[in-house]
Structure formats: C-alpha cells, structure tokens
Image 1 (spheres, one colour):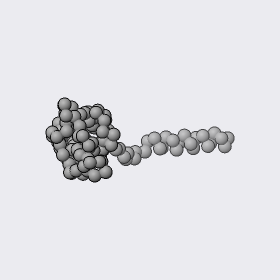
Image 2 (cartoon, one colour):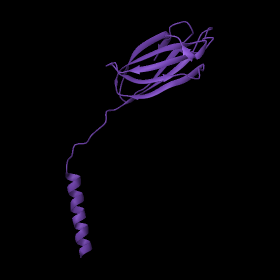
Image 3 (cartoon, rainbow, N blue to C red):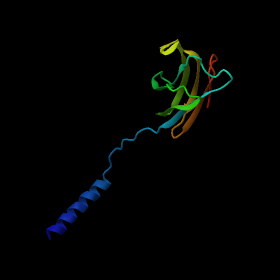
Image 4 (cartoon, rainbow, N blue to C red):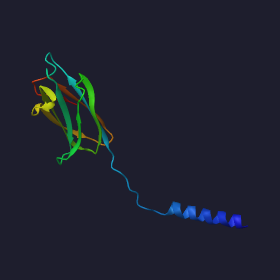
Amino acid sequence: MNRVAALIVLAMIAIAACSATSPRLSSPATARVTVRQVWVGRHRRYIEGALPVVELYASNGTLIDRAEDTNYVAEKVLLTSTVLPDAIEVRSYVLPCDANCGRLDDPNDACSATIDVVAGQAVEVRVERSAGLPCVIRV
C-alpha cells in the first residue's frame, strides 16, 4: 500500500508541475557571419609580407570579433562569428610588414561595408584585396 500511495503522490506532483506556468528565459536568435579573404589581381601581395585584418562591429560601435591572417595565404576563411541580428559593419585593412613582420606599417588598403544581418541567416562575406589598392567587400 505504501508503494501505491507513493506513486499517487508522485503523479500528483508531476501533474501540478506540468500545469504550473513559469516564465521561460529565451535567448535571442542569432546569425552567422563568415568572412573569406581572397588576393586578386596581378600584384596580389606585398613583397615583404603583410598582416591582413578583418573586424566586425555592432551598430553601436562595439567590436564583435577580429581576425588576422598570420599565414598570408591566397584564399581562406578568416572569420566565422555568431552574431545577434543587427546592422553589422565589416572593416578590413592590411598592416604591411616593414622589412619583416616583426615591425608593421600603419593600416593600408582599407575597406568597409555594413550588412543587415537577420536572425537565422548565414551571411557569406568576401574581402577581395590586391596590394596597394583598397580592398572590396562583396556579400
């Protein structure tokens, strides 16, 4: 009899728990931004090397993510970031090496673009660059 009583009590607790309403915390839906860098043109790269940089900024100016291409390859994904829906600014530039990459020059070949990112969306961004020219951002 004790076993039956215990099962009845457990069933009543389960029913009460299911019928109770409690606020649920839900996280905002996110999106994914992937930035691919491609060196284009005849004069594709800096002779002494360079450090390409990509940055993502929220509409309020907050830095979301930053990546550097330390391998200096012709084409690669530099950044994949999960972001909240927003007007995201993609900024890119190159820090040319000054004789060696232990010393870097000021930013060059900069470009930027603002993209509207919607929840659930996967955005592919392509940064095309050629040494000595401003980069181009394509979405």
